[in-house]
Length: 240
Ligand code: GLP
Image 1 (cartoon, helix red, strand yellow):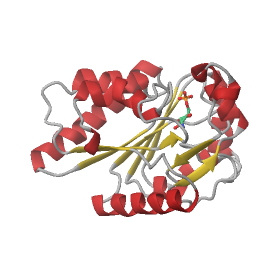
Image 2: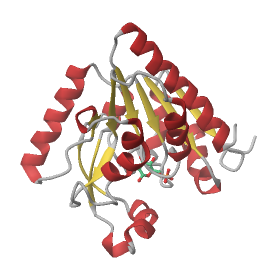
Image 3: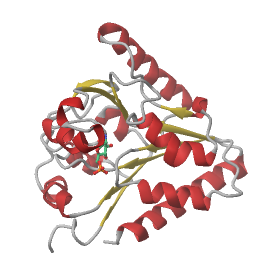
């Protein structure tokens, strides 16, 4: 249990250490990234701490993106990440991957399968940063998502859309569809690093950690991973 700032600093130290080790060995460093409010302090720490580090081996892979927005729409996750991390770190778009977010139907499904193939060729994700949605989602794997799911188009849950309403200026403007890495894809990352802060997450965190391992709470799938660390603050941690 740690306050958000301290947890973010601790995780930033681990991520920066990995980046430095990869640079020293000339190895690629594949970082899986999440959006939302939770990892913002982590990204600020990374921007502060990366000064002077060689980021040439870093490839980032974001978890998800809304469908139906222009790539330069300020509400897209791509824009958000450019503003808070990729821009300040100088990571070019070809090393800042996102799942495909245009097209539809079979063409989109094909692009998702290609994305998975490229990710496998890259060697998979070394360290995946994750938050947890208020309804227990991981990325946009909403309640009911299959544990072995791959990158695909999904329909957003009403809780997820409600949580995004302020950013979009009203619920009716929030996209209904998105593309997400699947739980199967996420669980293949070599390390999972999860943060959840605030009382609004307490109930779902308790269910994810101590309830049944159940697709109704996608975050319960974290328990299937052999190298998963979770940071909670005092208001989010289940009572002892
Ligand atoms: C988002 C993302 C998730 C994120 C979650 C929690 O919409 N798709 O990857 O973890 O919702 O967001 P927040 O950190 O703002 O609570």
